[in-house]
Image 1 (cartoon, helix red, strand yellow):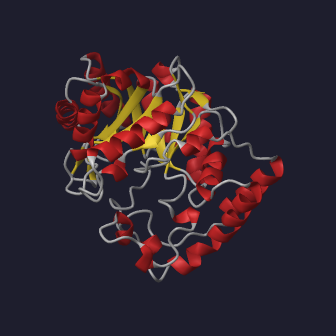
Image 2 (tube, rainbow, N blue to C red):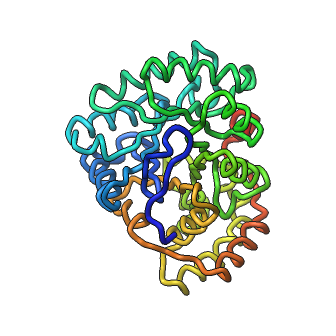
Length: 338
């Protein structure tokens, strides 16, 4: 990950962002865990770590909250009100168009209601740069969804269109209606199956960025969680079956080789995992989440993986054999690609 910047895709192809983006969800989950100023310092650390001219890619959500509300967006509103000089230094993507946190609504009315709600919560100091329906709606075709999104774009609610949890076919169909700037999917050493490979390849062909969320597997790949009892009270990971007592011991088999290689290389496990995701292609932008003030650290380190190291990590990813649901069970909870 020697190059510390990346170019976005689609209609944002002239915009340079940091090679590693910043997910903000954990700043509001659990609610009240951090003060505004702690969150603000974390955001600023990531921005200030970037080379001159590069924007920080920030990722928020209409439903990023312990209660399902707009707390994360309201936090950003307060951030931009207090630090207006940072508005132009950030590229803000927001996911929405969900009923609650699990059921997508990508109808024209659902999309409009979502972007209006997001715009109100963000306030006057920063407009969305990128809007993403958080999940594909099986009741709405990609073409009809895009027509609704293009209408809202032309009305000025946001400047670029993205997708989230889409498959390669949906990405291709949507992009044929209007250029997609970024497709957000889960990619990590424990989540790199044919589905991810197809999307990454299709995005490269179409000139679309891939925003790869959870590159350290919700912290799992760093070795910070070795028993279910170590999941903090109120943490959403307590609801994930990959962290339960039945699956966790099996899943931990992938962690020891990561820790060993990171120690040998003199980097943290998180930096190693993020560097591997970034090495999957110049259009692949890792999206770790952080609420800590050292959030800029993965963005400062210029980590290059050798061919031997990539082979070792690719082999590890191919044999991960992770057990448990990606999220809380069931078709909607699984957040299946659509």
